[in-house]
Length: 281
Image (tube, rainbow, N blue to C red; front, top):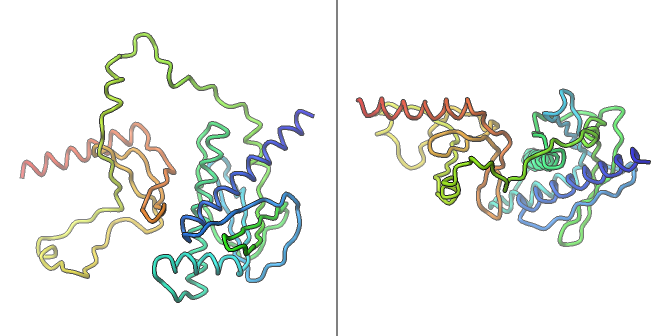
């Protein structure tokens, strides 16, 4: 009975995170209100020209999550998203690419939800589009309802490895309000200090003659691919990396990876060395 109860709780948590993650991604990208619900019944739904996504999480080396959406859903989501940024005419390929971005945001948010539940870091390690549905997946039907009342259906399935995360007892964490007696009391004063936070999309070097040629419309190519995560920098140190998202019309960054202590020290020393070298010149 206890094992069955844990399995039911895991299912509810996983389905709930998928519901909230997909609805938030749709809302932020399209600017419309979407409600996503798990129908909680393993049924088959008729879908044409499907977009099949396979996701790997950092907690397991093999793919553990799959999402299948029909053309009716990915076309509507793509067109609404592009219309929100002023693009009224969108091809099927544009809509598919936009849907892939929505799915990527969904997977990142889903991994963050798992991280909170199981108290261990889980990230969306990698994903890819498939040409056909994988075999052996137990599908659950989800509905996506727009604010206008239109409803679309999609299928999502996950491996037992995802549910197994909830079988591991969470790591006991100390109360964040508790401090050792020898903890410096001056630390409380530092908590109110403001720090500059910036996001780096990439860097490059240009010769002076190239800089002088820059004008309106010029494009400067950076040293980072568009699919790579951006750096979150505090006081010239890279503290985290994440993916760019849109929240209520503003750019934001969803943290997907925290930099290790060694990485933070290395990036800080690198920035300091660059400034010293620049001053020496």
